[in-house]
Image: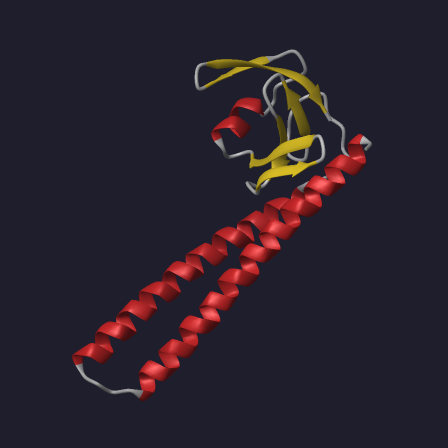
Length: 152
């Protein structure tokens, strides 16, 4: 698989992760709103108020989760998989002596056949260490020296 094909596959993996996350949160928001509507129809005093307050808190929490997921979507929109850089930046596939990393969003491990790549955000500890580095540079993560062998 060519480098651009690999980055394209990784991008699609990240995109699917973000889309699934957003859809799941939106589904949960719909469910909580339906529960709120049914709570409105039930007027059982203190129990009613407590249930309503808990649903409101859940709705706020889901709203925050949705905002975070939408930020991930915004970051993904900025990823250019066709760009080639000599230093590590957003959209790069970075091969190291330990693992491979795709800098986009934190979507977890992509694994297929003999390819294993961690899809990470530039805001993660490893992303911060790799950012701006070049082939041959060494970063230390959890006490382990890791050499960058390729920036694609």
